Image 1 (cartoon, rainbow, N blue to C red):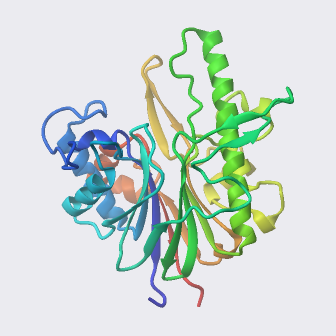
Image 2: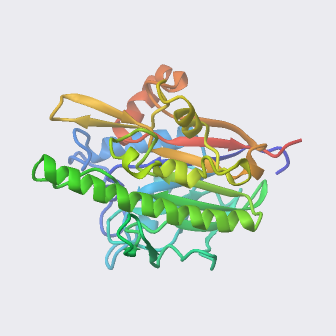
Amino acid sequence: MAGRRFRIAAYNVEWFHALFDDDGRPMSDNQWSARQGVTRREQLEALATVFRAMDADAVMVVEAPDISRHRNGAVALANFARAAGIRAREVCFGFANDTQQELMLLYDPDVITARHDPVELGAPRFDGQLRIDLDVDATEDVVVFSKPPLEMRLETPLGPMRMIGVHVKSKAPHGARDADHAMKIAIANRRKQLAQCIWLRRRIEAHLAEATPLIVLGDLNDGPGLDVYEELFGRSGVEIVMGWGDGDSGLMFDPHAAKALERRIVAAPTTARFYIASEGRYLSALLDYIFVSPDLRGAARRWRVWHPFEDPGCWEDEGLRAALLAASDHFPVTLDLQAEG
């Protein structure tokens, strides 16, 4: 494995679970997918094109197919990998949830091994509870993850490392009746989102204390300056997860996040694109990240957002450009790692 590139990816796939029947078989037909304006066949074919183009050794799939009494999302994801003809064909998953959006790692077993390994650390496991006072009322809040992060141990060409896949709660005020109600929901959701990021950061710090290389990747539903309530709480969830401002020794690094934090008046890279029907326009945001611990900075060769309008290679390949737009409202992020020397 000496000198081999090791590529990891984070990809939030919109409505992935709706592309499979209860036996985990892809429904490649002309019925509309849950993604607006795209058939199930078109979305599956688009996803296959994107996954093949990335050619990643490991893909953290955010919003992977669901696990329930009658459905097995891991089987569905493995069936997709087989149909798409990609190397990343084995599935690692952790604590199931009831949101129809799982966190799963697709990986190439010829390159790496991965297992769910929620070790006991200074902070609670992600299937437990965190008690924390989030405001100034001196009352503890009980925080739980609706989508518990996927905490794994990996054996890779760079040696053993830990990886945490995340999908932190959205801050959007879904279900608001009016502007005042929307504000209340948005503030409550941001409090929960920040609490989850604090919990995640505590687990990160415990892993960093063990001196094992660490990667944290997925969808944080947050970025510097994304909403008006950020100033109310002092820091964004991204800053908390990174350890931004706490010293370089514990800093988790992603160049896109760092750019957004250092130069807020300059347009930052974006990883998601949502259509706002009430305004007749698209909203772009930086939500998806791949953070590495300090001991992996030297091996990190290239971060890339596969954005059809911001990445020249994606734009110039018409087939890939169309596939990225049809596959999901998020675009994948990849990181190439290679041992020094």
